[in-house]
Length: 599
Image 1 (cartoon, one colour):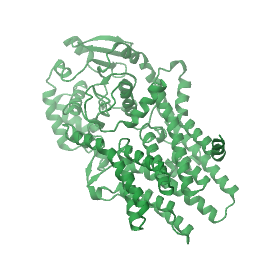
Image 2: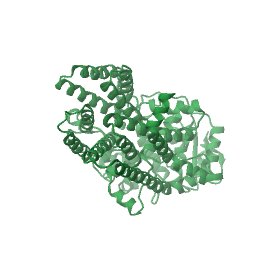
Image 3: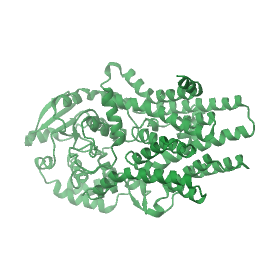
Image 4: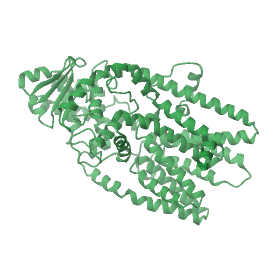
């Protein structure tokens, strides 16, 4: 009991701030629930990049599909692309606690940032021994991360200008970074304790966390593998045999955990849609180096840390931070050796930027101590930084909330149709929702239109599968060229004539977005720079596809229902198809959404 009281007495401020950070992250969700009142239809506001796809994966756990290989489609027995461990953690937590998808998403929006705060706090405290640095680092990492990449936004905040943000805090995002960052930081803390102490339990923690990292997020495992490799190399150079053995033990035993992942990867590479996957992820063969101003700034800061601590010997914590920074440099440049360019932004957002903030925290308060700034002024500076960080995240959330509010307000209308599907449709049935593949209709943005929201809700709030989705390319496709088939289907539903197809595709290159994925971005191209052979290939295929009757088109792949928001997309030909071919019958209508059941 005395130890617990002593712990709270020593770290009460960190604990209060951790809870405050978690509360700040979930505040938009609580606000929306309150403002919606009686109009709340069960659909809360989740708007970070790809968030609905992660929630669809969590939904798979609720539905008993634990490999989470195909969260969108009815074909489930595929090798996975994203490892399922984070979603299993979230899903089983929700099931044990009796929470629905909204509940578990909000729970982890609160819990993960709070735990991330505490992990950074205790890691920095161990490395620096300075509580002010230990408070600075997690506050800025979670609440003011954007100011590192866009320092001009600080001036906007100070002058009262509105931020133009449309996504909530990055730490609102489930799985990555909510779960992956927890594993990353927990490993760093455990491994530091393994190096700095003789306590055996930290060896087991380090092995377990490193081994599981690959089943959480590939980028986490790659970064940590590089870090351990550098640690081992430096230990050898410095002739520290005991430390080398510690590093080697963690690296070798932890690597045994990777066997299932690489077996799955082998099966993944043999699947017929693997080329589609590499295209969608924008994988590029390159040996070109990548420059990072974040890594450079971290190295400069560490140089000044070294200067401040002269003539004392270089400390273990300095080496630890230096190797973390160098790991980031190696990670974003691994393609120099491997020839395979990974998305460097993932290393930047989730690893290099937090490490830079930790280094800045250590440097800042070592410098203030060195020039003998009184503690009261240091606390005042820290208070100002904390306040600015909270104001910053409030401005981000306010801008994002206002941007998405009208869309989510309208989306509550889907409560009845989602309820109907949950009550009447068989689990794992397949639903086609118009605009599940992007419709390049002028004046419509895929991220804000109603029909796209309905397709999202199908995979989050029902046990059903969808015919297609804009995130389909993130997993293996269930059928050969299924993405192109849905592009052809979209062209016919929009009544594009065969002789107009080439001109239409050239005029509306965005229609390829659900096929191209990251293809253009990773190559530094504009999405309008669609290769000519793509256009000619689709144009050629469309000549034959257009001539097929609707019964043949809709019987090609499994389809049980069509859910059409007629108020949103009134010009689609579903009524004419029903009347002409008797292909399906109307089983639900609420004046806006019509549901057809395929006969």
